[in-house]
Length: 144
Image (cartoon, rainbow, N blue to C red; front, side):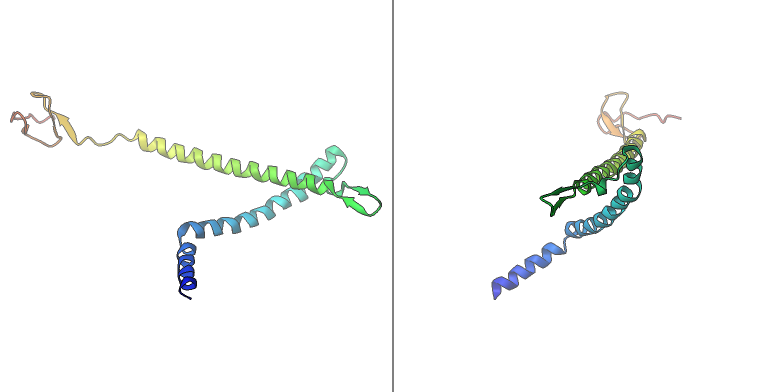
């Protein structure tokens, strides 16, 4: 009984972690996205390809031994669905990476406010607001 309780506690801890919840949301959104891509292929791309190829892929089939039908057109449609989904995901990731790189470059372009300066007498590094060098005790002149 204790092993089951410990197992359930570990499972509860695992399922409540952020990564699992993010993955669950991703799977749900992926399922909805699959419906959108399938509709795009079935309702828009396949008919357009049918105009140029003279046939709709879904209707392509071969009958074997009088009873068995191989619907290879549906397979071609599934491959097209996959390729379009992969292309859309690639474009989204590329867009996000581009925006991320642009934001990173902007952060790098902003110069950091200096916090240290060099003593003109002993060349030691000192605080920017120092009026006397702690190393050589020289009085530092204020720059206007």
